[in-house]
Image (cartoon, rainbow, N blue to C red):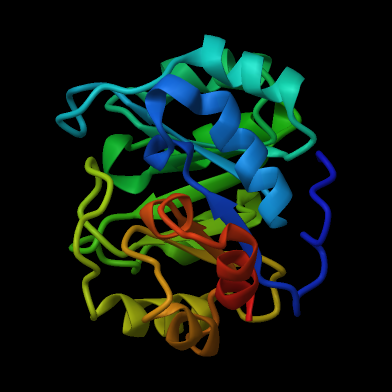
Length: 223
């Protein structure tokens, strides 16, 4: 498995800035800002225009980022056919690959393939998706992502019920070493509540890239 600094420390909250919220004409500057601010990972949203309405990046960008930054790359596949995308992004240098539970009836197989390709594995649950089948996936899982918004757009409003879903997920994975992440709507107003609920990885985009003091923002998010 790839080494992500701090991953095996259960007391450390990891911060992953979403490059989607950086200035698209100056992505290199956005990566540099994330590094200087003390982020732990770089979050890259991949959108296909089907599972979510927007289009974003491809394997070429992930490969370029992986060669230009010391930050591990967390790739979030918001796509209808994750099975076809996993090999492409693993080969491009992703350290952690996430796809959505809704997108495949073969989640266990896909998670196992992610690990076999040398990446950490993650699965994301949309706000309306039940967590009931999570126990069936735990033997091939490193990260559970609780979506705080309906995915597809940067800057969407945080759904308050996310906090309780984080608590539920944490109870389900207790003792396994699986981390719980929150993606979408994470900012200075809810980070402490999410940490107290058990989240140990926070994805933040607009909050960080619009901050006048990104390092202070990362420190506050981490707690």
